[in-house]
Length: 306
Figure 1 (tube, rainbow, N blue to C red):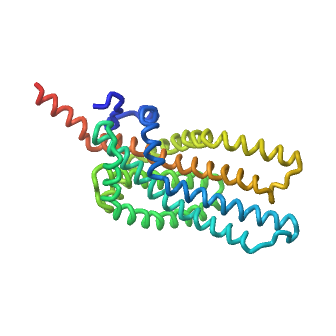
Figure 2 (cartoon, rainbow, N blue to C red; figure 1 turned 45 degrees about the horizontal axis):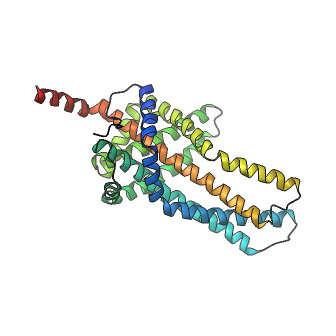
Figure 3 (cartoon, helix red, strand yellow; figure 1 turned 180 degrees about the vertical axis):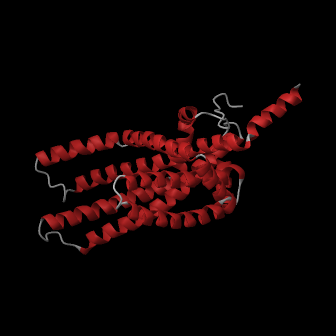
C-alpha cells in the first residue's frame, strides 16, 4: 500500500470530510496536476485561441466605439463572435474532461490504494464514454430547467436568492456524485443518476453545506492562482495609462490581456476539476454511510486472520 494513501471509504463527520479532502490534495496535488495538464492539453490550446479572439474582438470594438467609427472593421466582430463560440466549446469540452478525469482519477486512487496509472484512467473514460455523453446531454437539459426556475425566483426578494443558491449547490452535487457513481462502480446512466439524486437528497443539508464550504475554499484557490497575473496586469494598465499608451490599439497590450485572460480561464477550469475531486471524497463517505461495504470488508478480514 502507498504510505501516503488516504482512505476515503470512511464514515466521517462533516469536518473530517473537509479535512480528508485537503489531506488528499496535500499528498496528491503534484501527481494529479501533472496528469491533469496532459489530459487538458487541447483545452489549454483552445483557451489560448479563445482568449486571443475575445481580446482582439473586444479591443477592436472598444476602439471603434470610443473613436467614433475609427478602426471600424468587420473582422473585429468576427473575432469576438468566434471567441464566444470557442468559449462555449471550451465549457463543453472541459466539463467532459474535468468531470470524467477527476472522477476516474479518484476512483483509480481508491481501487488501487493510492497507485494511480494514466492508462487505467484513460481506459475507464473510454469504457464509460457513452454514459458520459448521455449524462452531459441530459444534464444540459436539467440546467436549462434550472435557469428557467432561477429566472422566476429572481423576482422573489432574498428568499428567491437563497433558493437559487440551494438549487445551484444541489445541481452541482447531483452532477458530481453521479459521475463518481459511473466511475467507481461502472453503473449505467439510470443507476448512476438515481444514486446521485438519492445521495444528494437523503443527505441534503450535508451536501449543501459541503458544496458551500468547498466552493468558497476552491474560490480562494482560484483567486491565488490568478493573483500574480492579475497584479501584473494591474501594474501594466496603471503605467500604460500614466504614460499615455493607447491600450485599445497597442499590440503589446493585446498580448498581455490575452495571457491574463487565458490565466483567468485556466484557473477557473482547474477549480472546476478540484470541485469534482471534492465530490469524489464526499461520494465515498456517503457510499460507506449507506452501504457499509469497506467496514464490513475489514470485519471479514479480521475474522479470516483469527
